Image 1 (tube, helix red, strand yellow):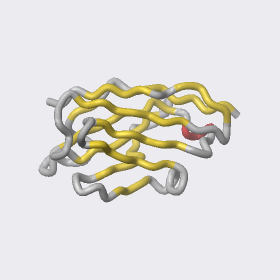
Image 2 (spheres, helix red, strand yellow; image 1 turned 90 degrees about the vertical axis):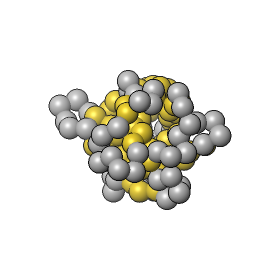
Image 3 (cartoon, rainbow, N blue to C red; image 1 turned 120 degrees about the horizontal axis):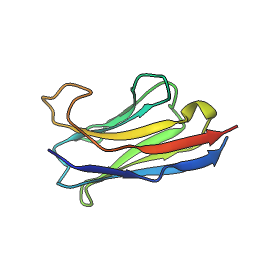
Image 4 (cartoon, helix red, strand yellow; image 1 turned 135 degrees about the vertical axis):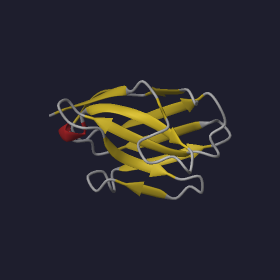
Length: 118
């Protein structure tokens, strides 16, 4: 089981930027890494995915504004967020899963809160 610790959340104004980081307790090169978010009263949703080969996918709502990246040497994954909107307010979770594990399974961090004020 991979231990994941997120950081970088906070309060930001509309249009602002934040960079979230996720530090893993083990080497991540074999894992598909993802960021999810959960807003109050809503289901957790997939925000961004980066494969072992560094291909990326994004939710339509964040395309062009969020960028996921990984540093296998440091065992970290980041989510760069620009042009933030109030609807981006949520707890953001880092996820690590092996290739045979289904999406939404694997290891999770404790989450980091992002609040975007209007």
